[in-house]
Image (cartoon, rainbow, N blue to C red):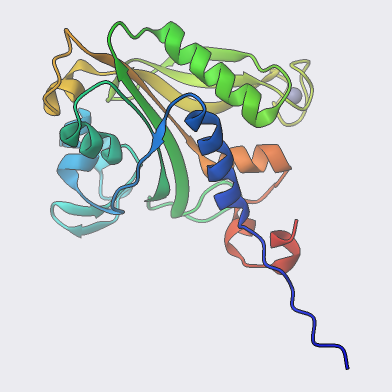
Length: 242
Ligand SMILES: [Zn+2]
């Protein structure tokens, strides 16, 4: 009698995505670093130039465990922990789960994954940031991608940018996915704010750096044409076997 056939498992698509991103950055000399999901408000907010009055600290957005202990709202506290424990220069990538009080729908989840990078060196400029992101997005989405930096505000960077990539579906002509603009918003980024460098004991006159971050679900949805992010967490074998 033939034995019972066993189904072979698959690497989850989010793990696959994190690995692909890490492979791209490890070729550029980045190391992978992880940190705790339960964080202090100091590591998650204060050290990142997000004072007590900032709207991101509102109870609406953050899961509090105690007054000063929360579920991290982004992976950026890993940057703080790494800088506190290591002397510059630094090049790290940090993936992991983050938590926010969001109602689950096709593009929101109270728990989702981010991946972010931090580069600290001497004489770092926005040019280095743009070239790095162009390389990353070209390697990840294929083709030859263009990057658009739009000025934006994040408390832990100055200047800060929303980063768009030219639409990989229409090549920038305009389609449903890019809502006719030819561009898709994909990352937040900027040069590390001098206050953040001071908070971890780096001299901002000597060291500069850039940081960027994106949603793992977001880039996986774009690459694989997934319309609803809840699919990632449903454990439906028809989806996982894609
Ligand atoms: Zn398009």
